[in-house]
Amino acid sequence: MNSEYKILVVDDTPELLDITVRTIKKAGYIVFSAADGAECIKKLHLEKPDIILLDVMLPDNNGKDIATQIKRDPEFSSVFIILLSSLRTSPDYVSEGLEDGADGYIIRPVEKRELLARIAAGCRIIKAERELKAASVKYQSLFSAMQEGVYLHEMVYNEDGKPIDYRIIEANPISEELLNIKPEDAIGKLATELYATDQAPFLDVYSKVAETGDPVTFEQYFPPMDKYFQISAYSPGKGKFATAFSDISLRKVAEEKLKHKNAELQKINAEKDKFFSIIAHDLKSPFNSILGFSEHLVEQVAKKDYENIENFAEIILKSSQTALNLLSNLMEWAQSQTGRMKFSPEQLDLTKLINDIVTQFENTALQKEIVVSKSLPHGLLVFADNSMLSTVLRNLISNAIKFTYPGGKIRISAEKDQNEIKISVGDTGKGISNEVLNKLFQIDGNITSPGTQNETGTGLGLILCKEFVKKNGGKIWVESKVNEGSTFYFTIPEHSNLEKKIIPLETVKDHARKAANLKILITEDDSTSELLLSTMLSSVSTEIITAKTGKEAIEMCHIHPDIDLIIMDIKMPEMDGYETTLQIREFNKEVIIIAQTAYGLDGEREKAHKSGCNDYISKPIKKTTLLDLIIKYFGV
Image 1: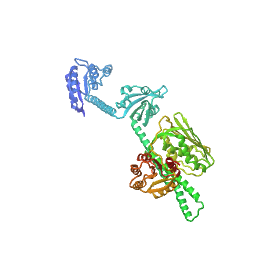
Image 2: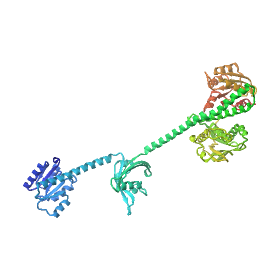
Image 3: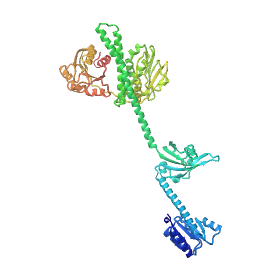
Image 4: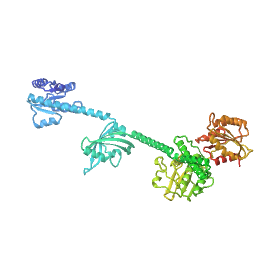
């Protein structure tokens, strides 16, 4: 609409001024008038016109000079000025007027139609400029308000037209927060200069965008700033490109944490699957032999058919030992995974510990005619958890026997290496392929293979070895060749200057009776276990008394104050073995009390000692282990 535009007409000829004003008003424009240059400047500041029709010849000033003055004022530089003249009509003068700032030039006399057309053209230009300015303001507002950093660039080419760099030509405010570079410090700089790099970052990607116009979005780590960015690049015109970028470092950290958590969950699932696999299959196998041959044994004895019963009994014994070892590994592994296994390092005599464990496997090695040799310094001390180190040695020696052919050899050695002890268990057995070696200590590796005499296994023992060695501050590895044998190595800290950690035992006074003439109280609520203990202890006792509850045990101790030894079950109805021992100690501090439990959990030994027990033994109880304990207190 024409009424949106204000027009100032400046002319010192009243008749021409009046005709021009009336013509323009009739067309719907808002019109003001002035008769000289001074009044023109006054009306300019007062009315702020959009268009000025300015006569070149004014009494106080030249219209061309007035136009130049107005265009130089930043406030009014956008006013559209049309010069009017009937005398200064030469092409040179018209050109000078336009060059000095005028936007149009009309030579009088001018037709009404032409005058209005010239004004309308000026209005269209003004409208376009306003729209462009509004768009520019909107763009700048959006540009400044964006939460993403934005850089506008132009490519820099060498003489052959090959892109070699790019220059930043515009930057929004948020870019400073993301890059720690002020926009004014970035604008005009080459990328290599700004980022202090030999080659402009992502030059190949950006040059392709600038040339083809195809946008691209990618995520990338940016070493100069040690940040991850998500970058979207597009081209507003050939040879130029813009980047919108955001710092995604925190998101990347979160993704890494999530990836780590997912890996942990996968590991937990693998462990769970392994656990159920062992229970569902591996644990059933030995029990299948135990139950099957036990049933067959009972039938034959009932028929007084004693043929092969010794072989059957041996199979039952071996299967029971297999099940026990598996259950021990399962229990220790479950404790370590749930954080219930207490880590209690102490100074240990490694030589003695290895000798004791090798003794446990003498019969198994003898049956396969395997020679076990040892190279162990005398009194070699290490600082480690006794239970964990025993488990590691037990599993490695057991595996060596299992995978060594009859008549083969096993060598166990230990040596000091700076501040740690290196232990090795080597064999001349089957060996391990490279493919299996890479998965040997992984819970999800599912590595199980039969021994040289088809002995079974679960692979869980080596997982325990790795965890327990690591827990003790060492490392474990293996060297192996197929058909030549394997050697497992692990290290344990020495710390030989530390004092030995000893759990204090109840002081034992001199006992009149020897281990062959003992009066023994067995406290056990399970009849089968009671019978087994009575059978085991028959060779060292003259009298065996039994109690099924804690209260009965206390009563028996009152009735028989001369009891030499109490085998105390920890898990009993009404009153557990700890409380029973505490109450017995109130009136009898001399009797030897050995705690026995099927729990085998970490901390049970300490609890037993605190309650007043002299020693501790875990179920299932071996006769030799139990008799060794008794000899410890009563002699031979």
